[in-house]
Length: 397
Image (cartoon, rainbow, N blue to C red; front, side):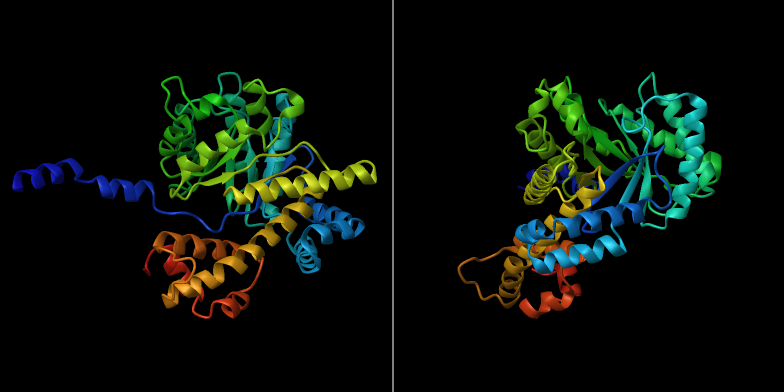
């Protein structure tokens, strides 16, 4: 037995430390969405303009929204739309911007830098063009011009790398960050990025492995999120246009792989976008609102707590679905948390991993203002913020 112990010790030396470094735990401060606006159109008033348009839609469709979420939730959504409608704003230089003359994109990049510097929201950034042979020089120039014009890196800044097909593109993004930090005298690890997964090769590589997992772990801790690209991915899989959707089976498979690859790394997974927007006749608007509400709710049920919003009307159903989801989660989670803390048992006997999940969903609900800590304590008197965080971090068992 001593020989066996020695062999096992040698085999596993450093393994746990490596796993702990690669998988430090999840993130409950994830934004509910990323709003994409063409860099040619975005201004410092974009968040307020979207909030105003969304509030107007909420008021016009109040009866439908109450049907979907109830009076209290609709009231909470209205407060959110008035005070802070957009959590994360991305100025787009890729598909939502298109290919324009270099002098035009140079001008828009500088203007985007000024806009981002003046926004005053917690999370913001740009989507550059891809790091492909035909686009990477333009992508790098745009990123540098944005940062130059901003004067300093805006708070919460991140850039999105689209069209990822190989893990080496994540390495290239790391090198880009390092070079920009050195050239501009920025502190180490100031720049962070997201990887947009919109190609089947990003999910399954030629060698049969998950490219997205390789890319994530080549990112040197700089990757904040994995974003699903609905329509490029569906088209590459040969899905007919009328069937391309966030709830198609190929989308579910891709996002499940992304979720597994990022689990416990702290990297956020974001659902993609829908091209159906609430405009047109009243019937068309109501149908689009119902559809988006369904898609957001479905994503939340599957563990995708963030998604893309492409129109002010999407803010209404994004916030409504999110608030009602977490309110319902609290009603289930809080009594089970209290039972776990009391060790009462009952019909459902939860273990530490489940207690961690229960605490995490409550913390997520608090982070998006779906309820207050007083609401939590009314249902679970022992589950204060400290206890919730300790349960999430497995410091209570």
